Image 1 (tube, rainbow, N blue to C red):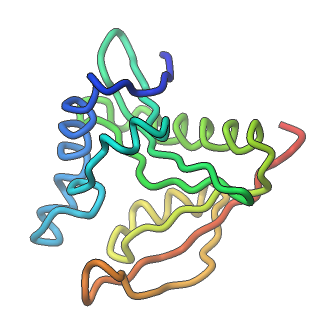
Image 2: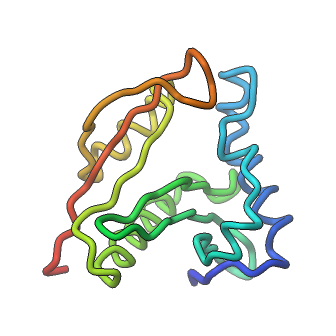
Amino acid sequence: MTIRRALSGDLPAVAALTTAAYAPYTALFGTPPIPVTEDYAPRIERGEIWLLEEDGGLAGLIALEQHPDHAMIFSVAVAPAFQGKKLGIKLLDFADEQARSWGVPEVRLYTNSRMERNIALYSAYGYRETGRRANPHRPGWTLVDMVKPVDRAA
C-alpha cells in the first residue's frame, strides 16, 4: 500500500472514485455532496490530493489543505471495492502525519450533519465536534465542524 500525490493525469480517476465513494450519500440527499461536484484540477495542481494505491489500483484518496495553524481535510474517499478494510483510518493517519510535518497543532474537517456514520467514525478516531453551521452552498444543509489535536510525540 502506498500513498502518493495526485498528478494532473489522475484527475479522471479522482473524480470517478469520489463519485463512487459518495454514491450512498448522493442517493440519501437526492443530489451529490459537494466533494462529488468539486473541480479537483486546482487541488491537484496545489498538491492537495493524495492517492492511496493498493495492488496497483486506486483504493482511496484524501484532499488535505495546509493552513498556517491547521491542516484541513476537504474529503476522504475510499473506493467501494476497498471499503471495510480500515483504509479511511489509514488516510486519517496520513493527515496526522502531514500535519506534524507541517508543524501545525491540529487537523480540522467538516461534514454534513446527515453523514452520521462518518461523524461516528471521526469521533471514535479522536475528533470532537466544535460546532454546527449552515452550509453556505446548500441552503437547508448543516455542516458539522470537527477538530483533532495532533500528537507531537507520534
